[in-house]
Amino acid sequence: MQNQLENKVCAGFFVRFAAFAIDSIIAAFIVGMVKLPFSIAAAGGVDLLKANFIFDYNFLDVLGYIGISAYFVLLTYFAHSTPGKMMFRLEVVTSKEEWTFLNVLYRETVGRFLSSLLCIGYFAVLVQKDKQGFHDMLCDTYVVYRNMETVSAKPMHSVIPAPAGTVGMAVPSSFVNETQRVVEPVPQMPVNETSEVEPVPQMLVNEKSEVQPLSAEQAGQAYQAPIYHQTSAFQVTESHPVQAEPGEERISADGSDIGKEE
Image (cartoon, rainbow, N blue to C red; front, side, top):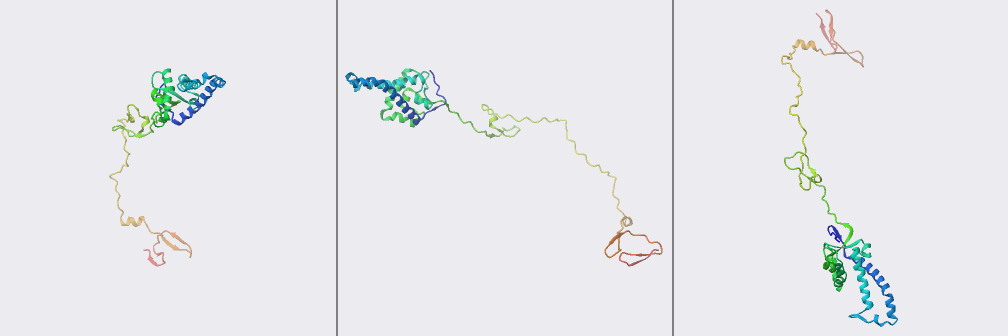
C-alpha cells in the first residue's frame, strides 16, 4: 500500500502522547481480560504460570507483552491508525513505496523499545522537523493528520507596471500569466486618419468697414444733456429741451435768464 507524504501535516508531541495514553488504557484493558483466566489459574496453584519463561519474565508477562504489541501492530498495519489516533484524526504513513507487515512489526516492537529508553526517542518528536521519534526514524514512518494538507499561501494581488513600450495603466499581477509573467498591452482605439478636426469658424470682419469719427456739431446734436426743473418742493422731473420761438426768452434750469431767441 502506498501513502503519499506530500503536503501532509505532521502531528506534534502532545497530541501523539494523548493518543498513546488512550491506546495504552484500551490495550491494557483488553490484555487484562485475556490474562484474567490465567491469573486465576496461577493464583489457584498452577506453578507453571508463575515460573520464569523467558529470562526473568513468566508466562503472564510474556502474554501481556504479546497482547499489547499485537494491538499496535495489527491496527497500525491494517488501519494505519489506532483508536487513540482515530480520536485525533491521526494516521501512520511512510514515504516508501511499500507498506509491509515486517516494517510495522519492527516499528512497534524494537523501535518502541529503543524509544522507551529514558524516553529520549519519544522526546525527539519535540525537536525533529518532521516530528519523528526514534521508532519513526528506524522505519521511515510519519504520524500525520488525516484529511489535512498544507496549503501554500498565495501572494496578494500586487500592482505591477506595464513593460516599456506598452500603452495602458498598471494591472494587478493576478491577471498576469504566472508562467510567462507577460503583460499584454491595452489595445488602442482606432483613429480614422482621414478624419480631421475642423477649426471653429471665426467671425468675418469687413476690412472695408471703418468707424467714422463724429464731428463736434454731430456730437452735440446726438446728445443733449437733460434739463431738470423743480415743480414742487419734493419732486424733480426730467424735461427735454424745448426750442423757444423767436422773440421768446429762454430760462436755464437754475432760473437765470439766457436771453431771447433771435
